[in-house]
Image (tube, rainbow, N blue to C red; front, side, top):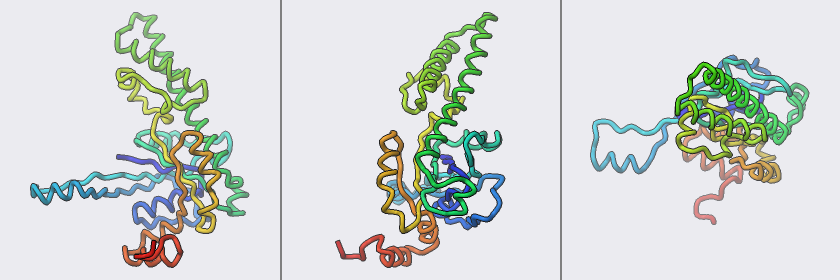
Length: 263
């Protein structure tokens, strides 16, 4: 499974990527923007598979893998669109993790505007809906041209019906993931890889001190129908570099968990 880590520049995407994949890519805010995605593969260990492997003793045990793609920053400012090459790379991923900056930084504020997760989220969703609308309308124009030339098969009619429903949804400012398509309609439009049809998780990337101050923003995002969590990216990156025992001691010292045996 391919998951795209996306968001504005310097929002903490690479910090989260490093934490997830135990990588060490630079997260210096003064470093120039990346030109291509960082890619990391994480094996998902499943106890059920482990037990089956111990029981049946196959020659090889294969666990599921998640491939994380840390893309360069997009939507730095209103009206700014990412390069088509970045769009193409994002499009082939099966799900998105949108990282939004929720920590204060005066220098980043000057370059990219103040940290405003709800504003950035709204802009992101608008851009995804607009992009999908352009794709759907262009395809519908080709279908209508084909009708005039006598090309009208049952499969194309199903596709046309699905596209008209999708365009109506997008024109209402609603993402495709919020609508229900019939199985045959979903199959007909699957190849378009619509952005707003994909599952998305919102991560509010904040500082250790600001971790417990994001309840209002988190509630507002949930209210809009998104899955969302708060993360202290730098803390998680440091934690991922430690062994299990060191990590538990570190978290205890930071008062993020209670010591063993304490409720």
